[in-house]
Amino acid sequence: MTMRENGAYQCKLLIMRRFVPGLKLVQELREDRYMTTSNERNLREIMIWGSAIGAGFGAASLAALQPHLDFAFSYRPVLAFIVAMALVYFYWNLIFRSLDEPALRVRRNVATGLICLLGIAGLLYPIRFIAPHNYGEVMTGLITAFVALSGVAALLLLCRRFFNEG
Image (tube, rainbow, N blue to C red; front, side):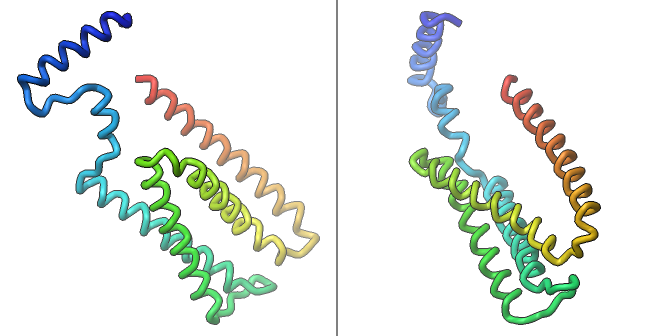
């Protein structure tokens, strides 16, 4: 569609909008895509609380982990559970708020980097309890998992590009 055809199209939409209340322009529809219906709010709550509880249990299990891969319950796992839940809860709120406010983009990127680093640290933390003669086997498993997850991430990115084209 040329610039002139696009302008004529928008002019027709403006005229139609005058006579048809509720008709929206394409730009307005794009701006409204972040408006939430009750289903979207429910889905967001499930995403927020599901990942917050998962992160809380992950942090609590890491806090309870002792040498020789034993678990000891104390106040530390409870505190780690609460802190991790709060961190992920505020992270998701920042993500959803930054969709509406572009000025929060830098904060969103910093928070995402921090969450990624904490996830990697949580994955690698138990390695310090592994006996030195088992490092080779563990590293082989970690490299295999990294390659497999990288392949899944690449497929997800390809799917995203495919759906964004259409």
